[in-house]
Length: 207
Image 1: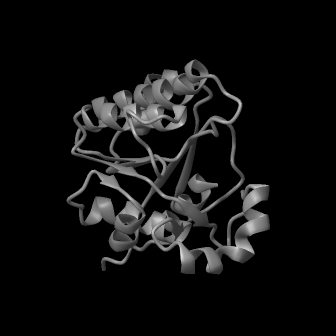
Image 2: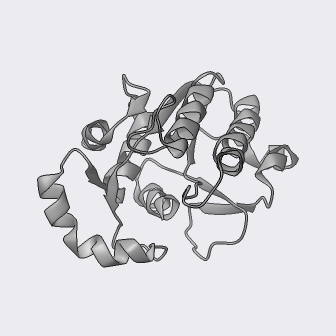
């Protein structure tokens, strides 16, 4: 859901000239700016070195819920896969800005398993040597109207978003704002490397 929302913002943004969508399987969308690369195994991204070279940014939106998962399994998907992917990118694009979708309340030393794993992932990414690396921690998000890939839960609560946004402004944002903030992190930069909801809203509003 997050990846589709961010993709739509990139395709609609005047200063984004080309987007390479890297998927494990085909996603049915077409646009003059868009290219698709099918990489079934993200641990073998090096096989596509020529295809992934020459880009200014990576918006890494892949992820999975930790519900029902053991820490070792969740770590393999969230930490190992992300770091392996990023290591190949920085090798071929040292001037790249890397943006990682983390989560609200991420904490490397926290009690929640998912928060610790995502915290370790953030820390490792910041040490890889990208030109810039940002970790985005969105809370509850409202999908964009054009989106098709929306989780059933969000379809149920989407109509209540204005209510949640009014009473929990520090924990709610839109995918529109998240996408703009990620784009602006590349175009304008940001003083913090970890962006909470308030930072995402601030960066999204910069013109």
